[in-house]
Length: 102
Image (cartoon, rainbow, N blue to C red; front, side, top):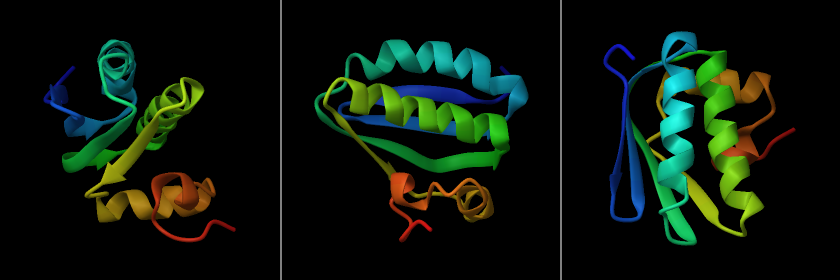
């Protein structure tokens, strides 16, 4: 999984390293387990993410979808600047809380 890591710290999931096609699969499997242990209001900290591609975006959306599916909320914090163009491209700004989508 290269340098990518996903760690649970209280009500915060901390994601680090490259979130790409090579790492998103294993991180998604790990994330499903960790998401189930979060309280209803939780945070996903992206401050240590070094690279994100479309597979990484898909993984983040899956995490959001899983939380919403059980009535929870996942707030994304410290979103890397390089992720912004992908969020705009896929019209996901509202999901990630980075501005009005559309």
